[in-house]
Image 1 (cartoon, helix red, strand yellow):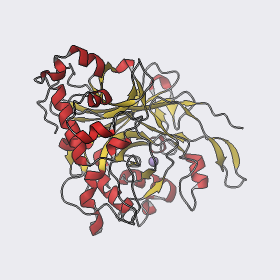
Image 2 (tube, rainbow, N blue to C red):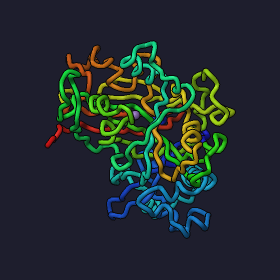
Image 3 (cartoon, rainbow, N blue to C red):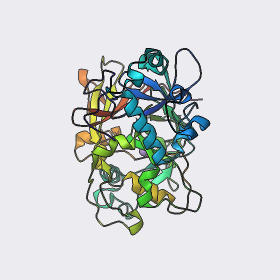
Length: 425
Ligand code: MN
């Protein structure tokens, strides 16, 4: 439920990312212990779900027995079904409402379960077994195709018929705030000369969102498109860092590899799909109509504003270089999940599936430096007479996202990281 009139007894400003309508899930360690557990963000606080559950504040006996919140990841909770997520969310909204005295009037309980956000340490919230990256923005695919193959051949024949994707690397998915070292690798800067080894010269960000699979499917049994929404737990921001020169030399014929797998940054709070329900929207027209297994009734795009800020070492504050929106995605999350499992491939709780770079129709909405600078032909102007074509050492990239409701905001927080100099050996 995402009722605009709901209000919490905790003070939360109208433009705060984490009102009672949101309640995103994360994993945190409180200051007085080293034991991570699940929580939700509410205003500037984190609500401790493990303690709430051990105190018997959730009714469901299975939660009390299995203690899914007293774990260092959200996987056990994600593995429950959509009705269990809905019951927990409803109970949390009840507990936090202005007119529920249970937590509001119990100072001792509040002391034990509500931590100031500034006092806790956030953790990577999910044990990500598999990470898949799609390529679902038509504008992005068209831009990149135009640069490398010309406008006539920009989109490959398959693109409008299926959500193109590749298997990424789960081990290097990192939490927002962790620095990213400039990768080293093999490139071929000059076609007339042999390849060389060294630091990437074309380091880039990719503005993406991703969803976590909740309960998965048995090997051999696809998730149909009509079932897909029930298997999607929630969303995060994703920066799919890319080394364009490494990628450009290695990708033929099997696709992205070391140019991608050095790091992928995600935001710490997983926004539940229930919080995003009011922001469903139509999405772009699909032409041609997709095959039956990719067709479903109803809106499945989401209206979430996305921004990318860049701060170079000489800048005193970040500067916004891109404004985009998830509604620009041609292929929806449910189409991605149905397509991913249509061959019987088993998705598992905690799998991360990212959208691909989300570029909008205008130049200011392109979701990578590759597009914003058009391969370096048009360096992006920054405050203080600086420009950037690709990322340099010390640059900080900050992704932000939010859905604007009626008097409230469903925020994603940020996914950020700073580039450290290469250390090639
Ligand atoms: Mn990507």
